[in-house]
Image (cartoon, rainbow, N blue to C red; front, side, top):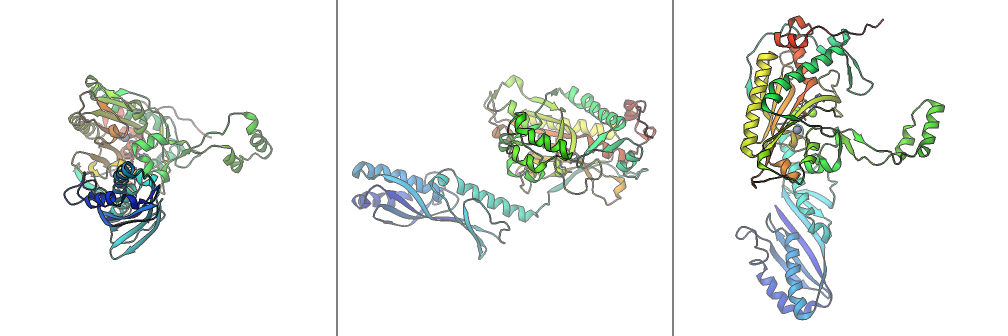
Amino acid sequence: MEFYLKASLKTSADPAAGKEEIEKIMAEAEKTIFAKGAPEGEGAKIKSWSLGDKSIDVELTSGRYVRVHDAVMRLKKALAESIGKTHKIGIRGVEAETFTITVPSEHDLKNKKIPYVKSVEFTDGNLVLELEVSETEMRNQVPDRILTLIEDKLEKDEYGAKAEHWNLLWESEDREFHYTEDPTEDMLKQGWLKRGAGRGQWIHGSVTTRLFRVFEQIVVEEILNPLGYDEMIFPKLVMWDIWKHSGHAKGIYPEIYYVCPPKTRDPEYWEDVMDYYKVTHEVPVEMLKDKIGDPIGGMCYAQCPPSWGFFQGETIATESLPILIFDRSGTSHRYESGGIHGIERVDEFHRIELVWLGTKEQVVETTKLLHERYAHIFNDIMDLKWRKAWVTPWFMAQEGLAGIAADEVTGTTDYEAPLPYRGPTGEWLEFQNVSINGDKYPTGFNVKSQSGEKLWSGCSGVGLERWTAAFLAQHGLDPEKWPPEIKKRFGKMPKQVKFL
Ligand code: ATP
Ligand code: ZN
Ligand code: MG
Ligand code: MG
Ligand code: MG
């Protein structure tokens, strides 16, 4: 990996007068200003330099340390101090004439439209990126971000475009299933639910709603109360700023439902829309496009990111740690692709999200307890066949990053269940996850602890549609055949509306 920069430092007068001082700085730079902060011999290098009429021109190269754009700023400062003092020559600015980054790669990039990148060439096992940057971008670390972006893209290609990491941790014993229908089809037949007007949206009747509440109550009684989680209400319309801090702004665009506010609340501004509707009985969608503002964010996608606004910028007292909270205040929305026929993959769904925050030890311990409680629920109360797998952390997947977390503690455990109607080789359904997110969120939202110890966090998303889908797929729709604990909690079948 190499950075190359040919730059021109524009001077306020002919720099020849300061040649001696300039020579001295250039001769020492690799041992002084270009070496600071780099391992021995790995700082930036000067390939050549010369003086123009009103410029000092340099060619710099570097590897990972003291990268050329950083080096040129250090050079500018040193030169300005020296010839400014002795000869009153100022340095007006830095122009990058040529700026390239060469990254080893086995293949070309698919998408070459990268901001501030003029061209991308693939030659001799290298990607050569030619940048078009001004001093501002060089100061703002744009070249570094371009390199990170390219490295992410290459790593993703290596892991396969969509492939997520998956590693089995535990699986319950095999069993025979007596029910092999698709529960959604069956529920439709029995009138338990109906399709909503929207894509991947359902209207739950009294029966499935009761079942959701049974599961929710189990979570309350078996996890939230005994472990001491307190309920909070997290926002469900999520602003870009939250997703910038959480990292989602890097990758969730294909899957979010965007939200646009009206440009004004003035009814007169909207009168033509209202009139159009009244006359045609059609909503004039094209007309609306002009009258609404830019998207301000999207509908809740992952439940926990907006909760961080509560802690953002704060220092948390030791006595408050660990913080154990949960939210069940509203729906989550995702624009899902394909296969949204049943209740297991929907565009509007219901979740309980648990969030915990504390020192690393507290977070790891909290997570352990949670896994134990979940196992108890799935084995002893819901009597499910299920398994646990170590997967690409959810935050990496949602930022569009491939691979697996760097250490053995940080990451996501998926809980999955087989759906007998899909046959013995059918894909298992992820019905929830438990994650240790390391210091990602406390760092991203600038949350500190009183003791100064680094804060960590974890979260777990209990998908009620997914629990229901897994439970019904394995046990069927007849409450008489359900495990006794569920049957008891469900009680008498609720009233159902009779349609003629
Ligand atoms: P999948 O791999 O099935 O697409 P995911 O990994 O994208 O799920 P997460 O982002 O981990 O889902 O969300 C946490 C939990 O939210 C999931 O384990 C699941 O219970 C639930 N969930 C996610 N997407 C949906 C959906 N489209 N419909 C219903 N529940 C969902
Ligand atoms: Zn979360
Ligand atoms: Mg998904
Ligand atoms: Mg997941
Ligand atoms: Mg998943």
